[in-house]
Image (cartoon, rainbow, N blue to C red; front, side, top):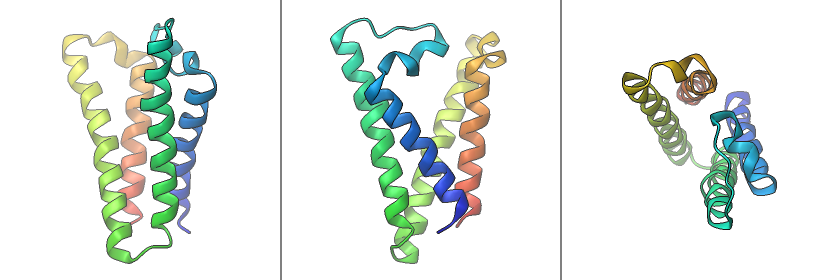
Length: 120
């Protein structure tokens, strides 16, 4: 198993478990609190379920055919790159957040995307 792929899978699994167990933890760094059942459900679905699904997919891809594995790594890297790009585009309208948590997550997302692409 590739260490880079496992590292990215652990990141997604951690995000997923945190979102399912304590949804407020996910949005807290951004000054947002999921105060309604609908908001907590959204956090659990988008960050929890998605995070665990991506982690499972990355782990499964490690024992799959080379073509399937490469497809998974590229798809997840593109998703992470899209998240990072969204943060950069958001900085055009609101530049200060990149100096706080959004900037940190921009770096994490960009680094994880690069890790996956290098693991191909």
